[in-house]
Image (cartoon, rainbow, N blue to C red; front, side):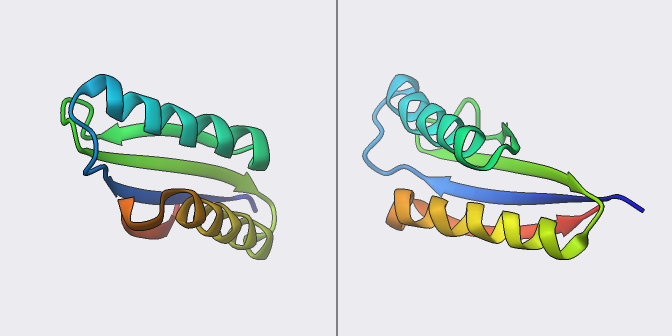
Length: 94
């Protein structure tokens, strides 16, 4: 039976002073995660905020262990890239 896993990343981009500044960070993160991990990525909240964003990365797999490992790698890579901008993260199973 396939499993669907969603990793949610909450960002606070303190140095952002406009939506354009924020979009630069968010687009870079989304592109990197898609390219490196082949996951679906979207901004799901905070679109109108200059300094806040919530990003979701989703994977579908026949193996829960594989999906969990993949999203853990996505989270670790995001944390390295974002540093203190990453406020919180969590995985949800659907």
